Image (cartoon, rainbow, N blue to C red; front, side):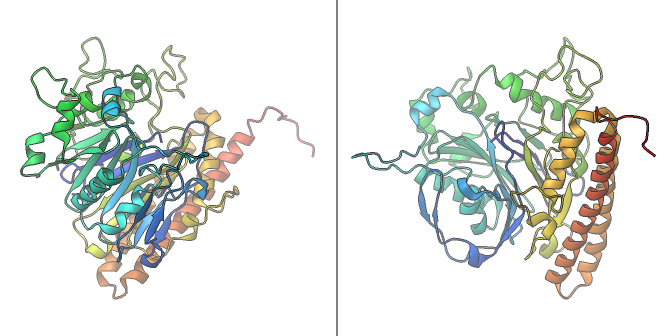
Length: 490
């Protein structure tokens, strides 16, 4: 899947929360319908079989309740994608990353092979289809998430390269797969943010810490031997740069991946680094754009939404620009047409654990949608977020958002202000409702009921504002139809 991930350490965020966010983008030419679901412990499988790889895995007893963002069409499996469990641990899976021939020659992917004739079926490894289901219900910290997923990768292998984020109230961890069975993971520094644009990301890693104290770095047990055997250390000074050792060096990265990191870091660090001109430290096509930086100011939820909606606004690369720059549309946007959803998990340290986790959700193209928070520790999903069907209907958040985006995109210059007003109105009302219900939850003796009421109010607000935006956008673009005529019939 083509996605973009941002991780924000607690000292880099505006309120001391850990924040992890990811655009879940469908493959080219596809638009996967999504919905929000809550998986109760009784509904979590005790034996899992993958649709894609046919791998079968026994799962532990006593799973936690967790939220999930599954595909509506289950023909290719669950694809739970992102969620928060009742222990306030969040996971997003996955950011599809890259690899290189030396890695894959040393540790090939574990691919499914169908049985034909006398040839027996060969089961594949684990992948994006099932990672959330296999890990999130069983972990109580972000570190536990890394260790559980790492052990599964070593045991079953994977058939694809992926980057996975975990967060709890104190820490964020990022894991990247290496070939079929190997992996590394780093704890995100509290004062930093991380950008991941479909490319092997980590540009530094402390092997000594990973094999000794294991404080900020973790990895598969034989990683040192794997690196040596396959001659993966490329740094002239003998330091491990994971991006160089395990990642890609393709021309396509300079159109598809690196420009996204350039735009986001340019937004958060406009003065500390020179991003443009002949003396630029980094350009959109630089291979060495930092994996993490300390931002020049604290990062808000609105900042996360803005950069994950980017179409290179304010640059010559903006496909919506009124100026016909030669570079217009040159790079793959972050806020792309085929985004299925955006999930932003915010684990707050200043409220009770029962309602500390917020899961902010948007569907469809981020350029045109709105980001709405829900209290993640819920037992029931509001219908507007959970009733997505394959049939198009404006009565759910997914399809209403898709419709607005498709109507607005060809007429961006005309309806852009309507979209901006919609996004600002929902953001303001969302913060207002969260503030209101945080106060009510302090006094509430029935936390679950108050959370249900809060989420229903948030969903009602989202539907009200989305319906208004759809009405206004539909009217505006209807007036632009080519078969219009300025003489009335009455």
